Image 1: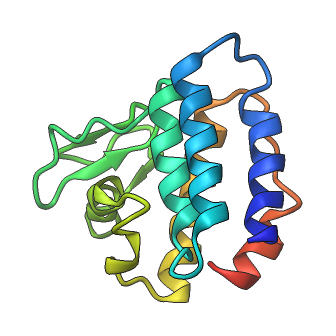
Image 2 (image 1 turned 180 degrees about the horizontal axis):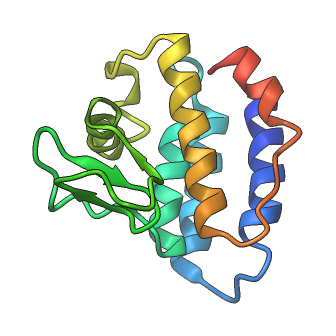
Length: 152
C-alpha cells in the first residue's frame, strides 16, 4: 500500500497543480484513500481504477458511448472512432476494448477483472500517456517504476 500511496502522492501533486476548490473531487480523493487504507487484499488494480475515475473530474474521461467492437480509441479526443485517426495517437481495436473494461471496474469489483502483470503494466503505461496528452507539462513519474515492479 505504501508504494501505491507514494505513487498517488507524486501523481496528484502534478495532476492537481492548478485545481481550485472542487468538493466532489475532494470527496472522491478522500473516499478512495480511505478505501485503500481499509482494504486488506485484492487491491492490485486500485491505481488503474483510481486513474480512470479521476479523469472524469479532470475533464477527459473517455466517451464510451461510441464504442463498437473493432473501434479505435482516439487518445487525443478521448473517444472511440471507426478508423485509425490521422494524427496516430490512438489505441488499436485490440487494446481499445480494454478501455471499456477498465471503466466498468470499481474498487469493490476490480479483483474480478483478471489481469496479468503484463496487461496491468501496459494499462498503466497507456494511462500515463493519456494523462500526459491531457495535462500540460505532466512529467515522467519517479514512483512509476516502483509501482510497475510491484503491481503492474
